[in-house]
Length: 253
Length: 253
Image (cartoon, rainbow over all chains, first blue to last red):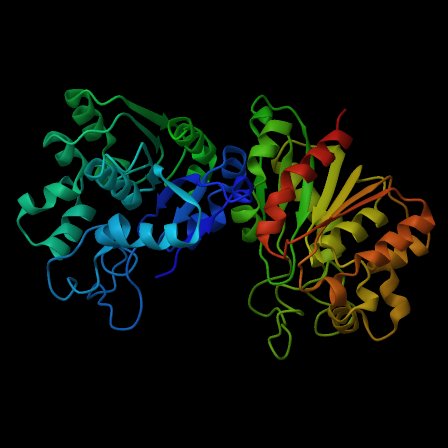
C-alpha cells in the first residue's frame, strides 16, 4: 500500500504535531490530492501533518470489478471491510484506516494521536464521515468536500455496498453517515463544501440528507453550497485552506 | 493548439488586467502547471490573468524525434521557429508566442497589453528569458524557475538547436539567454529560483552562466538557490506565489 505524508517545518525539532487524514474519491490514488490539493502552504503555516492513503488495495491477485467499472473494485474500496467473496480477502480498507495505517504512520512520523482530524472528497468524504462517526474518541475534527452522505440511498453506494457487504441493507448502516447519525452516532460539528455545478450532486451526493440528519440529531453542520464549482480538484484545492484552518482550530492543544 | 487561461474575479466588471505568461518545460502540455502550479489563489488576490500555452505543435502530421526521445520534437519545441526540415513547417513556437497567441488571447480575454510579464520552468524558463530579452517593449517583468539559461552550452539545448536551427552555433544566439545578453539585449531586472537538489542543475541548467552574464551587463538578477528542492512541480508551486507577487509589483499601472 502506498500513501503520502506531508510533514511541516514545525516538526523539525521533533515536536509531535496534529494530523489531518485525507481520503480520496473514486478512481484516485494517493497522488491526486498530493499533486493537486494545494494543502502544503496551509499545513506549513498551521503546523499540520497531512496523510493521504490510497482508495483500495492494489497489486496482483487483488480482484477488480468484473467489467472494470470505475465505481467498484480497484480505486473504489469505499472504506469498508468486505464480507463477500472474492473481495473479503483484500478489501479491508476500514481496518486499514482505523487500525493498521495509524500504527505505521505513528511509527515513522511525529503525529500527536490525541489531535487527529479527518476529511475527504466524494467517496472519501463518505469515508471521513463514517470513520469519524464510528471513532469519536480518535477524531476531534471532521470535514468533507462533496461527500457521498448516504451511500445506502444512491446508485454508487448501493452497487458498492451490495458487492462488498451483501444484499441486506441493514448491513450497510455502519458504513452510511446518515444511517449512523440516525442510529445515534454523533460528531461535535462538521464542515461540508459542495459545488453547485457538481454533476453528481442530485443523484449520488445528496447533501440535503445529511442536513436533515444533522438537524434532527442536533449536530452543528456548516454546509456551504459553492456556486459554479464542479466535482474536480479545482473545487477541492480552492477550499482546502479553509478546511485545514477549520481542523487546526479544533486540534489546538 | 490548446492553452489554459485563468481570469481572476477583478475582471468580472470588464476591467483589462495585467497578464503573466507561463511557459512549461520538456514533456509538458498546458495541463501540468494548470493542475499543479498553485497559481490561482495568488492570481485572484493580485488581479493577474495567467496564460499557459503548450510546449510544441501537436496533431497528426507533426514530426517527432525519430527515436521518440523526450527532449526533442513533441513536448520539446524549445520556443524557436525551426529552419530545418521536416520541423520547419510546424515547429514555429517563437512566432506562436510572440505574435499569434497574444492576438488570440486578447480577442477573447480582457488582457491589458501594456502590462505583460513572462515566466517559465526549465525549457520554459529558457523560453521566458529569450522571449523577454527579444521583446523588451512587450514585457515589463520576467522571472524563471530552474531555467536552461544557455542552451548553446548544454546537451539538451545543443541537440534541440541543432535539430531545429542547424549545426551552426551562430544561428543559436538569438535563442540563448546568455548569448542574447552578451550581444546587448537587456532586462530591467530578473528573478530566478533554482532548486539545490535539482538533478539537472550542473549539466543542463547552469545558472552561474546567467549570473556571470547579468553581472557583466549590469542586469539586477535575484538568483535564489533553494536548498533541498528538485526540478518538480513541488518546487515550482512552492515559489509560485513569490513570482506572481514579483510580477504584480512590476505590472501596476
